[in-house]
Structures are given as C-alpha cells and as structure tokens.
Amino acid sequence: MIDLRSDTVTRPTAAMREAMARAEVGDDVWGDDPSINAFEQAVAERAGKAAALLFPSGTQSNLCALLTHCQRGEEVIAGQYSHIYREEGGGAAALGSISVQPLPHEADGSLALESLRAAVKGDDIHHCRSRLLALENTFRGKVLPRDYALAATAQAHAQGLATHLDGARLFNASVATGLSLAELCEGFDSVSLCFSKGLGAPVGSLLLGEADFIARARRWRKTLGGGMRQAGLLAAACHHAFDHHVARLADDHDNARRLAEGLGAIPGVELRACDTNMVFTAVPAAHCGPLQAHLEARGILAAVGPVTRWVTHLDVSREDIERVVAAVGDYVTRAGSDLAAAAS
Image: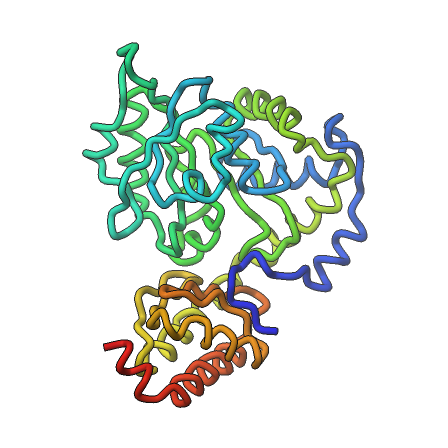
C-alpha cells in the first residue's frame, strides 16, 4: 500500500531494527538506561539546550511541558488550529486545569504580534493569568519564519511569559531552510521534538529545556504514566533516525512538490498548498468518498475530504508519487463532466 494519510505511518527500516536489537538497556526511571541517556544528550547538544527527556509521544511531551510551565487556573496562548489546542484531547484542561487561549493564524501559520500582545492578561483577579506562549513549527507543513519566532518569543518574555515550541516536524523546517536545529530552537524555553513522523522511528519524542525545567518535567512524566523502563530499544530507533534520516527529508519535500504539480494539473482537482512534505488539495464533496474508494482499490490510502492532506515520507518513493497522480487522473477521467461541473 502507498499510505499518504500521514508521516506517522512510517515503518522502521532494517538498519533501524538492527540498531534496536543491539541497544544496551537499563531502567530509565532509575536513570540508568545508557541508550536513552546517550540519545537525550546528543539531541540536547545539537539543539542548544541543557537537557532532554524521552516521552512515548509528542502529545505527552507537549502536555508535560504545559504542566511544568503552568499552574492550575493559568493560561497558555496558542493558535486556534494548533495541535496543542485542537488535536491533543483537551489534556491541558482535563488533567492540568490549564486554560488555552486560541488566537487566529496568519497565512504563514504565525500569530500576529499585536494579537499576542493584546491577549496577555495581567494580575487582575478576574482574569486567567497568562503564563505561556506555545508556537508550532512546521504548521500544516509551513515553516514558521525564524525572524518571527525570535520576535514573538522576545515579546512573550518581555510580557512575563515562558515560551514553548511544538516542534513535531522541526527537522522538516531545518532541512527546508538550511537552519540548524539550535537556530530554530532559539528563543524557546522548552521544545518538543518528534521522531516518529518523517524521521521514521516507531515511537518517541523528546522534551528539551534547561536542567531544572527538565527535572520538574521528569516528575510530571512519571505522574502521567510516561516513565518507561528498558526503553533504550526505542531510544536506539530514535537515535538511528536522528543520525541517518534527517537529511533525507529533502526527498520527501521533493516528492511533495512532484505530487502537487501532478495533482494540480488534473482538471477538477484544486491545489491549495504545498509546503515541506504536505500537499493540500480540494475536490467537490460528492466525489470524496468515491475517490477514496477508487484509490484504496488501487493500493493507495488517503484521507480524502473536501480538503485533503497528502503527506510524503520515507516509505513513499518517486514511483509511488507517479502512481498516485495516475490513479487520481484515472478517477477524474472516469468521472468526466460530472466532476468538472461539480468543481465549477
């Protein structure tokens, strides 16, 4: 199957499985798993942070960051379509009694500086106290401009807020811009990095920050059930991805561009956006179900909707892209004037 639903569907490569099999392990809750310790140190150093902490998922890493930064009844400012606000089960509110103040996104995924400034609440007892700014890079495949990130974090710090970056796909941003991991993490008090998306590890995210922050986060990780034992097997997979799969993200970006060019040339398919490894297209609602079934019958998985997100990753080749474009084109040919009429 060609699976374009997300880059989370990647499978460990043979070399990654071998690294997992060779991993030395200990008990990470006791702090003596050598594979985890080496992985955390290596990533922290490259990101320009003092310490790192391994989590099973980015959702748990983000939640732990919010719980460490904020107290009950305090507030996080985030984008209204950010993963933290929309896609993480309301964990901040459900488990931390933390409010999230959503702000609208600009076209590039940023939050307007004036909106950020106005959203920060002071010490008025009627208001939820603003404590944290959370940004996301990449956002729907778009790279958050570095100048903006530096300006937004500086403004947040000036207004007494801490800063957190959901960097689930920050490695894509690094490859797309040529900026180092440390440069993209600059200005943020904490950063969450995911290794189970484009980098292809089966599981694992890191939370990075200053040593005292990570020490407090370690306690919250235990409370959330995220303390793992011989998880060096997982860290070895992530470490292998960190060492071998970052530069190759450029292939995913190239494949996304090829996919966008191919789909955009098909009558009745509207190309909405293509950034890093994500392509967004639109087709009339009446054709979403039939198109998805048509693709699945040809060994292609896509979550087809009025706006469809197609995500390239290490298990998708250039030949696969050509096959997907041909399959969509075949559907449009079969649908004929009906699709064109619906599109218009």
